[in-house]
Length: 417
Ligand SMILES: *Cc1c(COP(=O)(O)O)cnc(C)c1O
Ligand SMILES: [Zn+2]
Picture 1 (tube, helix red, strand yellow):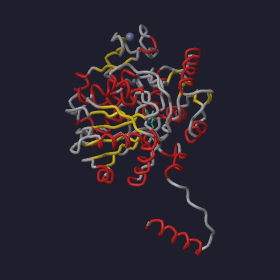
Picture 2 (cartoon, rainbow, N blue to C red):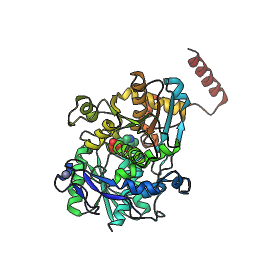
Picture 3 (cartoon, rainbow, N blue to C red):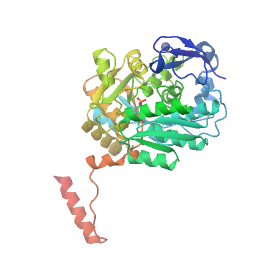
């Protein structure tokens, strides 16, 4: 059963009944992003610690009753969620964090947090009897949609910008998506996808527009809370592009707070790249978002016109959090430390979150006695080319023990310098 009460417009606050075809507020148009509102009083009666203790499912469907779904059979889905939440003792030592955790979302079926939203999109399309589902994406939303849809026998139409990393494109092709490579940036791909979705009536997986996708993304917050025995950390740190993920993380903690499973909502730290920081500028200047350049190696968060400005800003404002930007150099450095010291290979957009946490600790935004959880949102194998900038490739040698000895001597020398 579902505890959904209604849909509410984030702009004009009009209420609507849950309806399969309603995506945005009819009065406000595309900017009128809808939010799923729950009957917390009813939810509270059933969803408690006891419920979770007796819940045998260990992927995101563990939380299905807290989402806006009618489906109860998830046998045709990939196993999304249930990712590890590691204590990061090396990072604690290096950066003077009191207690630091890493939520490794790169271990999802298509290797990013986007699977949580795509899994819901696929179910919603099926609930609406649609056979084709479409989106625009710089990579992860698309590759994750293609994978989750393949398992559910849905067709996918994907609009990608010119600059899309090789690993993500390989996933798209492998999963059998119809790919339309648009001559332009993400903005251009998004515009064409929207025109096509309107024209052909495909199901829309664009995360900002579709109110149900945040309901999938929020499960990462549920997991962090449950993995800490419902005593979440002081801060949760994550990178921000469109603003949907951070909106979802806030929603997840808010749900748990409203049903008395946690007593405080963690402060959210939103991290952007210096070359594309519309949220940081709007937050610091206390004004609306303005279009930004998309100049960063962190392709997934290179979003010049974020599609979810209200939820993305509110998440930080309501949680008394903060927004900051990090340089590409800091992202590469954080990426190297993360893989060298914790064994987690992250894509640049995910490493940006760690870079943000480090900067926040240095600036005393995160205090020495505060705990944090960093969401590592995607896997480094998606975009291995950046590695060359931080870690040199090995030199070739002959199949000969003497050659190896020479190499070892050189290495020793280099390390002693
Ligand atoms: C999509 C994505 C983000 C940012 O999520 P938004 O909803 O666009 O703010 C961060 N990291 C990775 C790896 C992503 O795929
Ligand atoms: Zn409205």
